[in-house]
Image 1 (cartoon, rainbow, N blue to C red):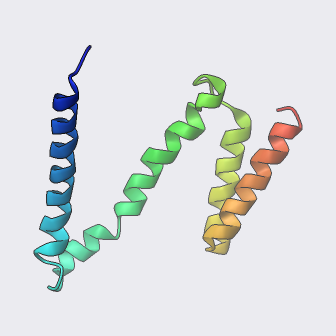
Image 2: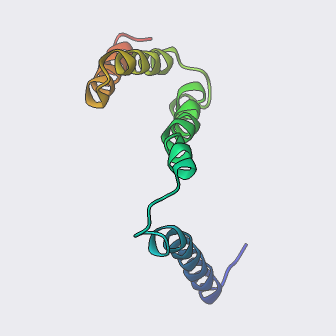
Length: 109
């Protein structure tokens, strides 16, 4: 598929404007007003909804193994989750998961 530079830049500008418009509609128009309680309640679950969608493919179908399940990545994710729930500290959880992954990959799993 061959796209002319003019068309490409028009698409990029359109997407940039659309992205700006979405953010402005939320932050610019109602940025100084208090959000309704129902909106605050739903926004609390944004991270809980988005993070599994980002992390699950990296754990269950990692690119490093060509999409094949990999035990070290699964164990590292489980350790990260367990340490995070136990300690309630993000940095400690990430560190524990990183040490687990590094250790298991170097042990030949």
